[in-house]
Length: 71
Image 1 (cartoon, rainbow, N blue to C red):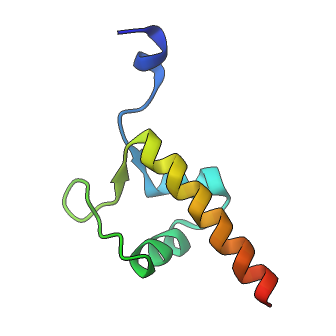
Image 2 (cartoon, helix red, strand yellow; image 1 turned 180 degrees about the horizontal axis):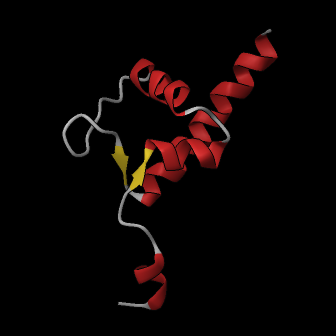
């Protein structure tokens, strides 16, 4: 295992993802539900791989931009 792999988190929480995209965690959870993405982590918590979190961050930012442009 490389040093980089050791430093990367194995899971990313909604709170961490919300901080990354500059959103409120509740707003992000609402968007995840609207996108049909049910909680898939521990219990009913949203937990993502770092790769999935990056993909979701990109999609969330695009959705926020589209919403702002529509106003």
